Length: 121
Image 1 (cartoon, one colour):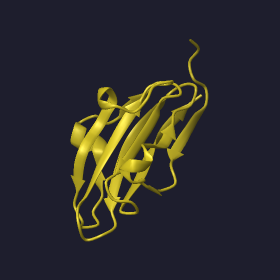
Image 2: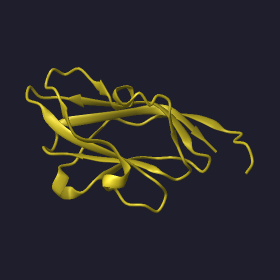
Image 3: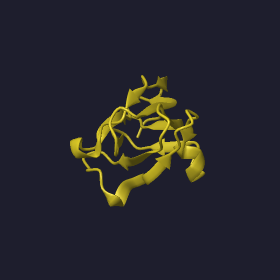
């Protein structure tokens, strides 16, 4: 495998997690050379806690218990972001080529996700 020659900063547009009934939304897809994430920040934009679940899904895989980053994690309603990777002590977080970060919340339009890092091609 050749070494990557193109390094692109990742700054995913903030997006709100869908409700669980809609399935896990794809938040980020790593490039052909993989990616390294510095943060996955989840912010609750209301005054009540919201529960979120995030997955790291290998290329061609499906979101499920075998690839959870966080399951039913309560994000407090104080407006302060929670860095999932920091909680996991997994920073930086390495992603394989074409793998994805997916997730959902138990309440729609309450949890906003920000993702940053570097994509390799």
